[in-house]
Picture 1 (cartoon, rainbow, N blue to C red):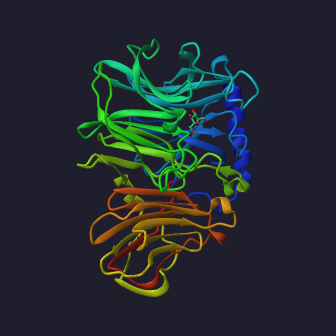
Picture 2: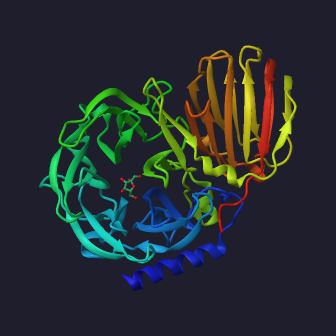
Picture 3: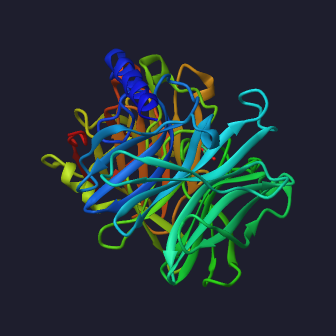
Length: 480
Ligand code: FRU
């Protein structure tokens, strides 16, 4: 594997030398160059946070999947590391697909899907997927140990293991496609090498609930148990399920040895254009954190022309509201990136566009819903996107603009109740993350500003809007 890893590292360096930075993130995890998708193997172990990701180091398009790697001591500042896994062994010949990391008595241990095309590369109807194991003594270099779990006859799509320790046992959930219905299966093990099937934990009842459930995750949150997964095959329904694929959760109750009792139907986690394949992990202090992939399969990705594609979201803290809704908020550590605060006076804006000043990367804004009568009002980011209250539809809308019609369009959430709306925006060179009312809703979208201009401004159309509180920050880079 050493030779393959060296070739992969070399390939990234070569692409990196030609990379253009206009769209490249300042404060989001991304590869130095080439393609990335899902976050993998998120873990805090031996004093270090590790984030791995699906990576094609030879090209800005998806291809034979490697695991890229970055580390951090504080969850804020990151360092690129050498590529951790390269495909090419019998069990993972055509890809080291998504998976997780666990702390096995201090040994950083990865469980991932070995992928092999049995027909033509890319032919999804003929493939073999098995769960593989790799370990590392130093947290940087990995030794592969081959397959530890193979699917029963008849199952081909069998991937994205997520493993945790509970009640002196290892537990694994895996995403499965069984007769064109998405499912999540549960296994258990004493030693991470020998796995016993436990039960089907959750399953689509009909095709409208998805033909494949990718990237399952299963963990306690508050008093409940949460199952996160990324179903493929949900059709758009009005404002819901607008993207090609979704990511969301089922809420319920579960104890080892029992069935998963679902008490709330599937809800999407994020309402933006670009959010997929999230994975959670536990912070040093026990908080449940999440990274997602901040893109969508089959979307145009203009950064490909710059030698790279794909980024992860900011790390987010999960909590559960009393009503059983998952809330996501930016990890509190991220305030360490702030430079001096820029405070603005309250603004009344009538049929106007008011620039707020130079590049701001974080913006905290209160909108007075009862004191505003404009038909549409909110924030624009140069001409790349705008986020506004639609007073007729009673929704908060994120609208993205582009020369490419495939990238244009709106995503939205219902306006929360209350007189005021609080918005926290993170504006990177080609992305926007919006946290509404401390995480009651989230919208995450890639944006593609013309000439790099995504400076925020306020606007109100057909009437007046009142912004009683506004503060902004520029943020430092996360790269060390
Ligand atoms: C999700 C996914 C996973 C798979 C990986 C391949 O985006 O399709 O199911 O393991 O990406 O890169």
